[in-house]
Length: 257
Image (tube, rainbow, N blue to C red; front, side):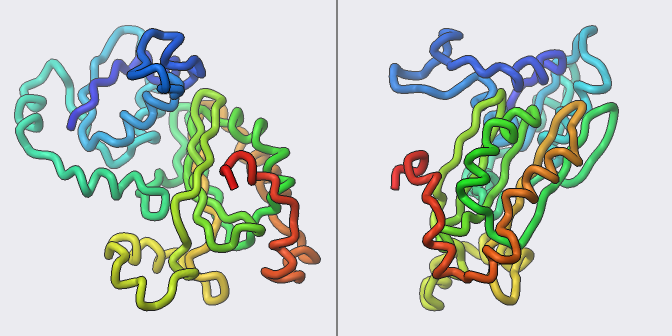
């Protein structure tokens, strides 16, 4: 699986919030994906990126690509290496696992050529109403953001965050492992259990906030302040899980429940 990337088009594609249908690229009439979302997912899914360099590309374009998918093998389309990797095989299961929000290998902190990647990690639940009110600002705060998060009124549900081009997709991706009975753990893939162990909290288990934002000119402090303001206050936290369930279900319509 190889994705060809024109370095000069990295930021323009990632900033394009148009629907695929508007660009004549929709796979079907029911395909409501955006150009930015589709481009980002195709880029991050492929283990190999074939780079098409151009005179319009600069160091910021290269830094942005490297931070979006730091584990990808990058080859030049003009070299002989591309033919070699094309026949190297592709592990579909491993690629799918690497993209699952529960165990995705998300980018780490980075800062190069004016492009920044910040990681926001917390072990306190988010207030659903405050987070919902902050969604527009957050999804427009970076060219790309993704990860997993924990809403106070949905203690058993692992939620995914996927934003590009000013559009945000929030989905339920199943339960947190800590909410499963012990017998069910045997059915959980080892890589998922290993990922949970890295984030394991003595009280909350694998429940956590783990969001990654990547963009040129990223306002790290502003994003951090906004996200932290959406966490439960000490008084709200003290109410415990039973009290958290009574918080406004601001995401119910978005999640279809």
